[in-house]
Length: 426
Image (tube, rainbow, N blue to C red):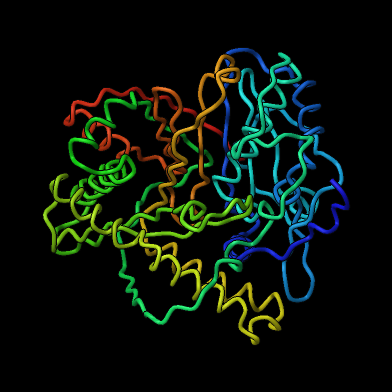
């Protein structure tokens, strides 16, 4: 692997925001879980991590800083795996300095929790799949070839895996795109010292056939259903003339668009919005509107323009030499403003595909986002084999959103099951 010190790198554009937005009780973390058909052997899991961690110098990393910038720097020793007792427990500055991720296990599951400054969902999933393969290789002696989604412990690290693609793919664009932000509906409820997961489990063919019938992607359909449920919830709580727009925050993986193999963050976001006083609130009309907003927001030109603006600000001479504590103040205010411009985040990891030799031992996957710092909900979506898992996380007592989503699934004749998990936070 060579000298790991060469992989000390300045945090990318997205990662900086995650550092600035954290506080002692919250930081932007996410969990990817792989559920096996047999009990986890923690001794083999630890050995697997020991074998694989150096292969991922930007993910198996810690966060350091100087007067002006934050950096991600490879850890020199694999952390100890731990039994799963808490979900997305906040990390202190000291913990981030030592290791900004953790590996947990339960009876039949491996859980990888990552601070978002290290990587995004795609990078995290590649790490999880590679760890799962190393575990199965040691336990069951399976062997597969290296792929773009599974990296082998013995392979060399490529420059493309560690590049800051925000900087690499910056080009000059003249076209200006104006953005407006309105106050939007925010979910409310009594906050609890718990994190509650409600996982909707659907047959993927049922919802795919409906999406095909409506001529939209699976992501557009699910986002539209969630927005319809939010509209119905607002209708129950607020009189029509006081209702606000419904908007969701949707991360978009840029790797295919810009031909990138980076394992660092490389996402931008679109924010589809429905205004209840200006638009029809039927699901069909919402789907049509969201589809159009996706088509406009996902153009390469639009993404390029947004990326250019973000990177240009980061590279501004005044910003470069602004002390880190001042950068944090400005970034924190910008993050708070952005967070209030949407109701919740919906992150779709997509369909997970594995070699048949691994499929034999793996039951399912899950993706769980942390709640937001000032609002109580988020949603992570992941598909494997014939099932799609839609994981809602909340820290309030009300489950009205999930109830409304269940009603919409019933109205659409989509069969579903739900599983509930409760984690104490204190």
